[in-house]
Image 1 (tube, one colour):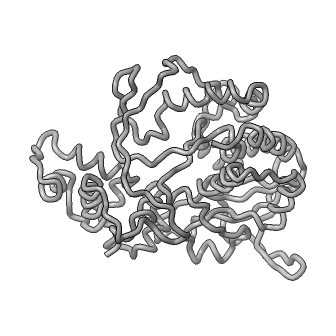
Image 2: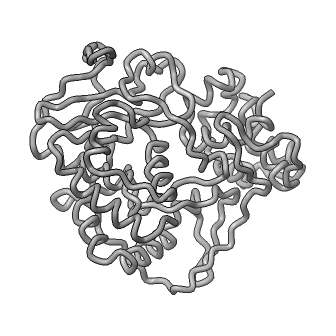
Image 3: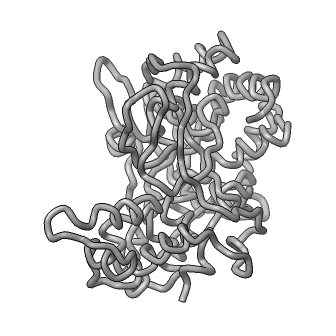
Length: 375
């Protein structure tokens, strides 16, 4: 967790930044597509509004740069942040991209800050993609983006000359009311008030000492934990945190549990810090339990004809009844970010192509365990 004084300095910078007329906002959308639909991707695509502000589309990796700066005790001035975005020097993201994106992307790809390869993910307290409270209604980010910041056709981006450089940009007609959505999403996305680092979990069951067992996709999305962290952050950051909440179009989370929150979660072993573009060292032994789990995932990704019951019988070596079977293997597969449409994907696509087309959670898994999963 970054130091309190650093996070509060970041708050001051961001509060001034969002009110700058020439601010650039990162919008976490249009960031995943099948190989046949790469033309629908918009990561790094820059949009300049007639009001002076700009925005670009990206994925969850963009927030990692803010956390890295905060952990490194670095806080830019507002002018430096504005200039970094407007000069297109602030990376939109890191990791694999596609030819279709490189053709029109104005915002650069950057280096991996190292959280994912070290076995961590960024857990957002207020979901960037859901529950924007607008006039008594809860809107998803999808509702907002499709209404106000649509994907558009690729031919809407035109080349602009900038001194010795050129880049593509779309001229975007906006109204003053739309900026509040950009601000709410941007602050949820990048503000250090709204996330913490969480080890990527292996299991699906999360047990809290003060409540009944809950079924949850990921510990980083476990609502009692998010409520607990927000309650702590509100106590640490005080009025500044309340100011942040007023701008993100979200209701305050109700924390009704005990301060003695204990989560009993099984995590993978041998998580190592690695350089960009690498994953866990293949020469190191892997935990036997995780080795079995990865074998289940590998079979799922390489076999289009398998089923969850077959995975349990052939890979896990357990009984799998016709009625009620398959749930254990499905939980394993889902815990790594894979869903049913990913079955057999590494037969249909190369490993690198698959990394560009799957969701962020599975992409992180493929990057982290590529020495074990890549044939």
